[in-house]
Length: 302
Image (cartoon, rainbow, N blue to C red):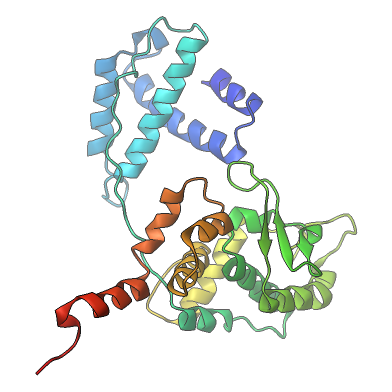
């Protein structure tokens, strides 16, 4: 397993992908170890089927079952691992070759926030304070660009081009770079943060990260989630969420306002259009417009 993970790093898989693969394979290793299966040669298709059933019946501490997406992720990791084992001549045949993945559920985002609700959340920070001004700038960037939490955490000062009104995302998901447009409101709050807050947070001249914590160091992903949850709770909208709600809100609002799905795909950094199409199911405005024109029940006729 360690050699497999090392191979993934050598092949330039992202650190997040390697960490996820390690987590999923360690769970399988622990399951095998508890059943005295300590030699890779002992793993057969029936044993893998038993593990699949184990995942189906497994219950977490809160009594909830693993989602089918989680089960599929763990099975997919096993398939990739054994496929690699055969290629590296650790095994003569692949016991996971015919292992089927459970069908993934196609779920919509739990909560979609309207532009008015997002505006309420954005006004929660006290922008007269250094941290409040930073937090407002963070949320403006998340909503204005739709970038992921990890992409926001990785931003450098040099990634913001005010003159071109552009933001450079380096090595986003899948290790892909992309440029994104910046709106005037985002630029306004980024400029205020840079001039009034970041200069007071920075303690070292060689710290180039855009968003800093109170210690003057680069903020981690957990810090972004914590601040988003705090202000969403403070807004008291009866909905919950964290950083991703800004991404969802941005995509659905643009779709409602007539943006092309391919443009939204490029902005969000989705490799496949199928990932972006989920927003067509939560864009109620277009559905309503067609419904009101085409369905006889849309209007009250006496």
